[in-house]
Amino acid sequence: MGMVKGVEKVKSISRSKMKMWMIRATTSVLLWTCVVQLTTIGEMWGPRVLKGWPSCFSHESAAALEEKVPAVPARVLPPKRVYKNNGYLMVSCNGGLNQMRAAICDMVAIARYLNVTLIVPELDKTSFWADPSEFQDIFDAEHFITSLRDEVRILKELPPRLKRRMELGMTYTMAPVSWSDISYYHNQILPLIQKYKVLHLNRTDTRLANNRQPLEIQKLRCRVNFSALRFTSQIEELGKRVIKLLRQNGPFLVLHLRYEMDMLAFSGCTQGCNNEEVEELTRMRYAYPWWKEKIINSDLKRKDGLCPLTPEETALTLRALDIDPNIQIYIAAGEIYGGERRMASLAAAYPKLVRKETLLEPSDLRFFQNHSSQMAALDYLVSLESDIFVPTYDGNMAKVVEGHRRFLGFKKTILLDRGLLVDLIDRYNNGSLSWDEFSYAVKESHANRMGNPVNRLVIPDRPKEEDYFYSNQKSAYCLQRIPWIL
Image (cartoon, rainbow, N blue to C red; front, side, top):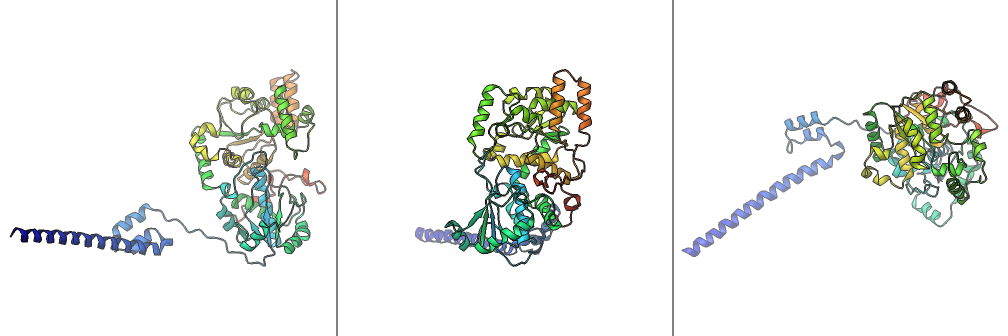
């Protein structure tokens, strides 16, 4: 009898386990069915999916979720432009972030004009900054490609067959002539692309003239600059956070204080430096063979307005312009040469000096360290949004930011007349001008240098001396907010 009861007990336990297993299996099948159904129409994921599958979700829960989740409009891409492909154009950019940015705009316009396929540009990794960043580390590559597809076909890399030829050294490489008209590319460059199928341009800065180009070419240069070249989401989000932190404390001025070691070594400007620093900067200049000018008279260059303002000169200039001493000043620059010693007078006049490194935690900038172009991209975003932008030297960042702020509605950008300023500063320092006289002269001379609309300087036989296209675009090209700018 005991044995029979034991057997029945074992059978009962087995039936219970079997029943539990069946419940679990059935539940798993039902859940998997729901997942498969939802995944099948994944591109329509959202409240409408939830409403469409009552077997998984009730109408009530779907309706409630639909109220909480806002509808995201589908992105409408421009239609692809269909054209006979004449070959492939590869480009290796040179210089810093903004020099490369302008070059990319030019290369897109050239590729469009020649009806060729552009390979996503390679960024400079051999310059003074030695930044290893790839294009997609700084710019949104997918947006760059898709937003321009109605103009030019852009690929991330060459097709396999042509890529193998390139790896075997069978690609023609050259540097195009600077400040060339677009007709030069049609007459000299296009035949080379058609002959070799792939052409590699290894220098891209200032390769397209500022003026006298077809209107559609000029429009496209603007479109690439103001729409297609979008920074990565990581850079954009961090830039927004810096701007938000600044805005919490009121208006702010961005000072592009170009008083970094590389700038001083390259320019030979040593105003205020001690003998050891002068020797260090000179050694650095000789160490870079592509910096052609070696023997430089710093005093003469400064008097000609060809040196960046020193921190001390900058402090005097801002005070003379009646810039509020309580305004936040964001320093958009690398490490200032001479450190705190050279920044002392500026910090005394404007105590609310901040940098990205002081606003953010070290962990926020961890992935940006030793990536100068990514750090420059952060400064670029903050510069665009500032109440006032003041560059102390007319380098590439100063020029490109100036042009972008014009596009955004002629935002206040104080363009310093360095040649005039250093003369006024010297006269004030030697006592031949009182403070009131000095301040009046500075304000008077800069009244029309605040980023307001001005006619472009056009010099047909001296293209290098013309206004840079990306600092002052003609209104007919860029400033009318052309409808196709996305």
